[in-house]
Image (cartoon, rainbow, N blue to C red):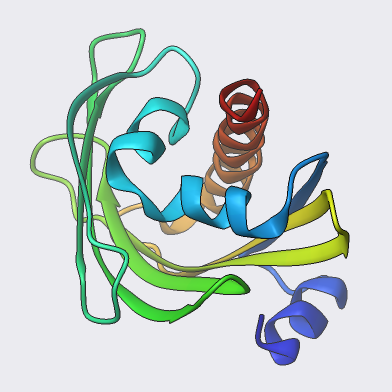
Length: 163
């Protein structure tokens, strides 16, 4: 992960969220789960969301397209581009998500770091930095809470899939 991002988030910069989890699995296995679209589709996104579309090309320049339906029937459409892949250390991508039809999406830079803590132990740290708020400039706290909840649930569901 870019150390500057970590420092910015640690210094309390607005629009940045950091969340991490540790797993009793080798780093290569955890990284492979994240970068295999069929496997990632099972755990990626908020718990309870229905996947309508999940396309994730985990190569530099690869496309991301994810459509989820939430419990209230709203469809969240995400599109993005993978910027960097360092096997098995890091995955960096930029994405934009629109929560409602006709609204401008917000954009975020997301970095997922896979840190080997031992031969069978891995820490995954996700740094999300909101870059552009679209039509939601007053909702930055809601977006930050959403990223914490969504990524927290994603990382928890990953734990179930690793078993």
